[in-house]
Length: 444
Image 1 (tube, helix red, strand yellow):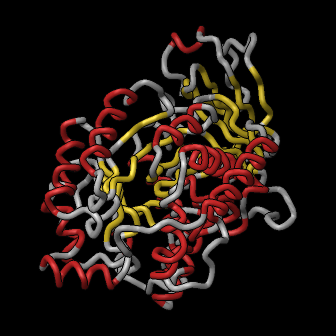
Image 2: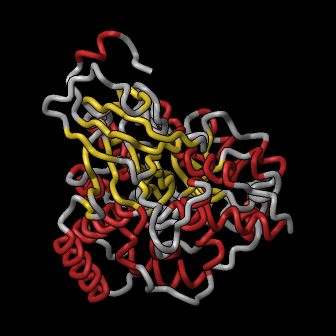
C-alpha cells in the first residue's frame, strides 16, 4: 500500500523487512515490510515488493523471526510508587492507604519521585510499553524522567481537594499545563483530581472547569470500592460517577481509574471520550471484591492499567489484561467469554485515550511498536500469535521496542542506564524510609 508516488523518493530511516504483523484488530499478516521515516510509518508492503524505496542510509532490520504489534499502553499508573514496591503486603485496603502508603508519601521529595519514575519507565519499556498515563505528585520530576527517557507520557498532576493548599496546587497545575502542553511530541498533560471523595463537589467542578479552560482532559479515581459508593450515596445522595457527571467531568476527555463498582445507572453517564483503566491485580491484592466491571464488560470502554507498583507490584499491562480475561471466564463460568480478540481490543484501546496518534500499524500512524520473539521455549510452538502473546508471553519475549521510530529497547536491552536507574531507586527508597511516616489530613 504505497501511499503515493512521492513516497518512493522519501529517504527511509528504518526498514523492517519480512515481519509478521499483528495489527490493532488482532489480525495477523505474514512477511510484510514496514518503512519508517521521521517517526511515522510511511509504507507497508508485501516482503520483496519495496523495490523503489530508497534504502540508502536506512537501518534495515530483519524481522523474519519476530511479530510486530502496536506498542502497549499503561493507561493508569503512579510511576514513582516503584519506591514502595513490596512495602505494604497482606494488609487490609484501609491499612494499605492510611497506615502505610499515604503516611510515607507525606514525606516525598522531588528527588524521590524522579528516581521512582525513572525505574518505572525502565520497567514499562522492558514490558513493551510505549506510552503511559501517570497520576501523581511532583509532576515536574516525572516530566523530567519522561523527557530523559524514550517513552511517551500523558501526565496528570494529582490534586487532593481536601488539602490546605489546594488553591496554590491548582494554580501550579494550570501553569504547568500552559507552559508545557504541546512542547514535546512525547508529552501530554491533563488535570488530575484524586477522586470525588477527596475533592468535594465545588472543588471538583473547579478542576473540571480548569480542564475545559485549558482544552485538555482529566484523570481520576472513581468508585474503587463498594464502601466508597455507599459513603457517597450516604453523604451526597449520588454515586461517585454521578458526582463526576455533575461537575461536568464527562464533558471532557476522561480517564477513569478503576470504576470497579460502577452501577447500571452510572453506565449511562459515560461519554464517547471516556475510558476506564482497569487493574485487576490490585483488586485481587487488596480484596476489593468482584465489582461490576465484568457485567456486560464489552459495553464499557475498558483499557488496561497497572495502578502503582505498591499494589500491583509489576507494571505490565499485558499481565493485567490477562488477569481480567481469566477472571471474566471464572466469574461467568464460561470459557468462551473474554476471548483473545476481546482482550486485545482492551489492550489496544489505551491508545485511543491518548493524543499520540499511535496504536495502529498503518500508513501515517506513529511508529510506536513492540517486537515479540515468540519462537522460544515456554511460548513455542506458535499456533496462534495473538494467543501466544496474550497467554504465554512476558517481558522476556519483548525483543525490541520502538517509540517515534527510535529504539527504546533493542536486542533485549532497554535504552537507559540500568545501573544508574537501579542505584537511584535504591538510594531514594532508603532515604524515604529513613524519613519515616508523616501525618495525613484525610483517610481512605
